[in-house]
Length: 97
Length: 462
Image (cartoon, rainbow over all chains, first blue to last red; front, side, top):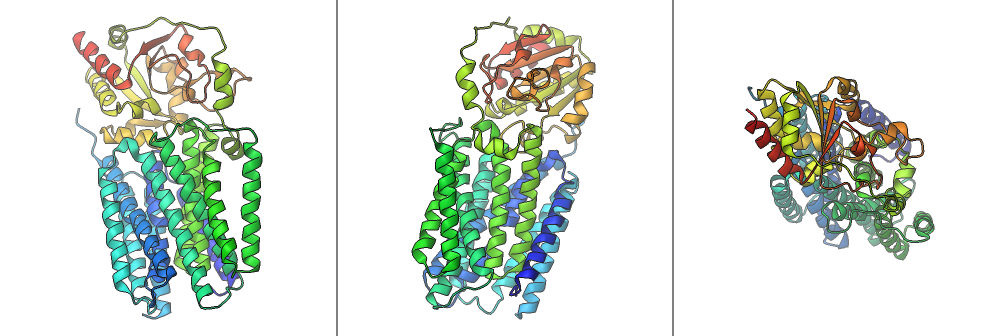
């Protein structure tokens, strides 16, 4: 997949720039949801955890993978849900006065 | 499912993450953006499950079910005032997951009798190092924010030397493992020393600097995922990890700029401690005490009010009470806005979330640069549990430790009302001359109780 480190580094650096570009447009108003939402995205490690835990033979690595799946899923599910909860509050229509 | 299709699924997920995050540029589109990112995650997970190397679905399902249940309970039960702790905890879990996956990968090589080559051993040690630091560092941040331990800096003589040596030790172990990836003792040593480093790096940082620490740990959790992505050769992790890393870096920079301090200063100066020890030695100053009734009379003749919330509002859970007061004043035809300093509270955007919870429309939450020119025209600036972010010394006193920090210019308003428990200095441990100004009215008490009393007093005048 990423056998060539130069390719991986290219992806890394370009993604970093895309990230900086996109995130510098987020207003301070939404900085907390930005953090919790990006936390959920960093739960992408779940992909690696699934690969480790789902291997054919049960070894120390699959146990480490299982724990990793649990914590990464907390990140993904908890992160997206709490972000949604916050953004729902921001979405509310202003009250009529 | 073939490798190419899985890779394309990861690409699709990454595109959804980027599009989702770009929708966070506006409160109107943000929620749909979050949903897009969640769909992206689902796609990445399903694609991974369909990969040929995943055979033990029972173990995977067990982990996902347990994690989902815990995550859902956490996300629905948590109080909005506790959001900084929640984010700290999630950062920590992200770091832990990355360290575990990197460790599992190294163990797989070890068990198969193979040696990882090229960039892989470097990526494994970085994933383990950053992941473990993020995990224990976040736990300490969590403990400080949850008040399981004191929020003030914990220091001891020679602390920076010890930390530096620990850091050098960790890097030395990294070098040993890269040179000989079969050295499991060194690897376990690295996990241990990185875990210690996470603790020792965060304990000297004070409560008021938590916005920086949380942003930085957020960035680390992304970089750890990124390193782990290099270790297991997975582009999905590399892209998403670097997005999160970039997000944390930007927030860290914004927070540091908002305090006019360098990152190094925040991390290593144990800000707030040295100053606090000298603050008590000055002569005891006193100020006149005002009551909510006095304040109500001022409100009665006001037409323009700016409310400045700070951490005290979060501690007292006063967001609903102050919103009630704001609505009451508006019903009397008074213009009311909220001035939000970037580092008010314990995390980026903390005040905005609390006031949104209390149904304040976000148009009324005004950023520092936009609100500052308006203070001169305001009849009342109501400071609710904020201190250092309204300290005029930052503007006027070159010898003040916070000199140069951008502040909210509340002292330019006609009247300044400060609701505070006592005259005690803020978390930076610095006295605030604002409290002694002629146009300042100090109202001592709990932020929530006084907000309610103010509303009662204003009603009573009708």
